[in-house]
Image (tube, rainbow, N blue to C red; front, side):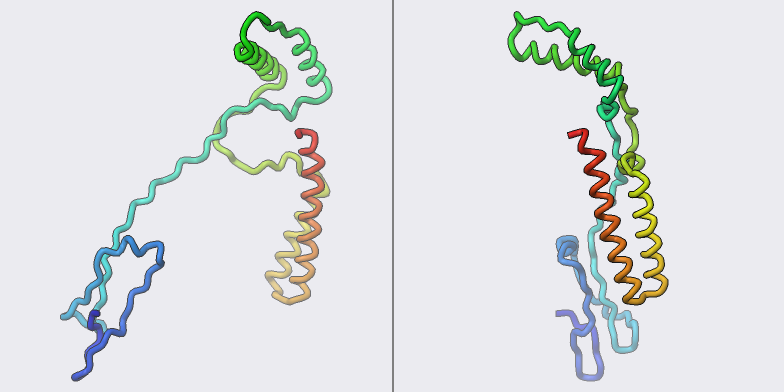
Length: 182
């Protein structure tokens, strides 16, 4: 124990340094500097810790992908015609036939549907947000602002009701929009 408080004939340890359990392995030493006083009876407590320099994370890169969500209407018919005109050499083994079929399908899809650009991810997928979703989210945002400014229980309850309604609207519209992809 380190003596951090002295008054007359009494000396005790009353000053502590607290740390999170996750950082306990970084502590190297804890000491009291005897000649330095913060206040006339308290000694300075010093803890030596090791800190790692945090590396700067690179922004997440999104790879190029085929725009399968455009496979509707005329483009779907064009893709279907392209697949019907495909020829596969049946004298090869199954793996090579599959690779040939896959490469022809992907080439057709990339030429007909196109590919996205690679780069940084800028926003979440909100392309499926319809007018009901946007109005529900605007109502939720407005109710939240009202509740934050007043801090009353009735505004909180109305915010929770609007929030639940918005969540349900988003789930319904998302299922409707993404259901065609699956």
